[in-house]
Structure formats: structure tokens, C-alpha cells
Image (tube, rainbow, N blue to C red):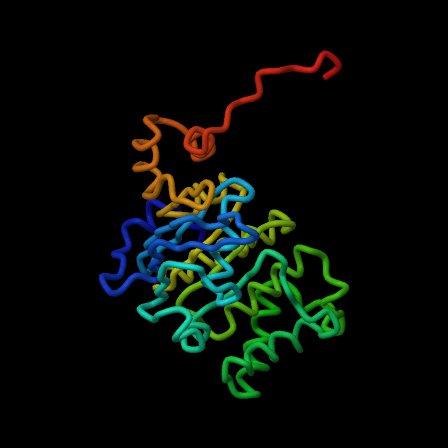
Length: 268
């Protein structure tokens, strides 16, 4: 079921409006620019990797796209709709997996999924049916009375992704979705996301695991200090980094200006 990004690249991307169109985005906290004139365009129907070192502005950008933070300047369009003016309509089309997995700890997985489904307007019977199917799919149905507060971090990530899928959104915003997930769970989640892209959905993903991004994403943007410093396919990024045959990690390190440590401690 797993598909390489080269195969995804053969799928004709939508010629309609972009899934995400960010122009000149600025967000300032305490006099510091978390995002500084950032511009990114994400076509519909692609698996998009949004990368950067810690503090580069990735999570702030995700929060703006989610409607959890208001930009100080710039414009954001999602699926042709303007943020924040059409934020309610936009949210109906989004599937969200935030980094901190904000869940209701005193609900079971089934109760939480049914609650999310009802928020999106699904009928009670359809919400219950989809919740049951998603719990089975994500291998979370063995302990139906277990509260989310008792879940491991990997289980919380899986139930968060299940909640993001339940209303069949057109755009997924995912901040470190594989963090804390074991290899089996991560493989399952990757296959499900690739299947969503094949049906025409768009994935906007941040991750520090660059090997995962290299395998999954057919478009990548790298940001540093709140600005985009490179954007394109992996091949195009190699050209921008002036390295023809290298990994995404090498490209990333070269573009963000990091250096391999040269000093050594005698006792190490």
C-alpha cells in the first residue's frame, strides 16, 4: 500500500486554486518575528513537507492556518477561502493533528471520535459507525473502556489522526504526527495518509524526521527564521543546494547554515 513520492508526483495536481496560499505572513511575539514575510503556495492533491529548525516558525504558521493565531500582516487563503473572514467554512474542510494532541482525557476513544464527528455535523448513527471503524483501523478497539488519559503518546497520536479523518476533510494540517509512534503505528498512519492524497486530499506536514519527509513528500518547503529559504521537489532542492546526489538531511543542514561540530571533548 505504501507509495513512493515519485509515484505521487505522477498524479496530476489540481489546476484549481491552491490548497494553501500564504503571502507575506508576519507574526510577532514580544517584539520578535516568529514568522517574517513568509510566502508558501501548496497545490491541491500533494503531500507537502514544511521543514525548519527549532524556532523557525513552523508551529506558528500551523496555528495561523488553524485559526488559533491571527497574523499581524499578510494574507492566508485555504482552498480558495480567506482567513480569518471565512474561518468557519475553512475549518469544516480541515483535518487537524496538532503537535500537543489536545484531547479530552476523560473520554474513551470512541466517545471522543463520536464527539468530533458530531461537531462536524455527522448524524449520531454515522458518527458511531465511523468511530468504530476508525478505532478498528488504528488498532485502538481492544480496550473500549480505556480513557484517553490512559493512552500512551503513540495511541494519542493515532486517535488524533482518527479524529482528523472522521469527516473526510480536503486538507490535513499535521504538526509532528509521528512523534512517539512506534514503527507499526507509523507505517499504518503513513499508508492511510498516502491513500488520502491519492483520493485528492492535501497533506501539510511538519516533521523533524527528515527520512520520513523524503519518503512521503513530493513537495517541500524549508524555512529558517520565519522565512522560506527553499521550496520545490527533492530534485529541485538538490539543485538549490548545489548538491546533485545527497539526502534531504544533507540539503536541510546545508541550507539552514548548520555545520558539523568540529570541536571534540577529550572525555567523549
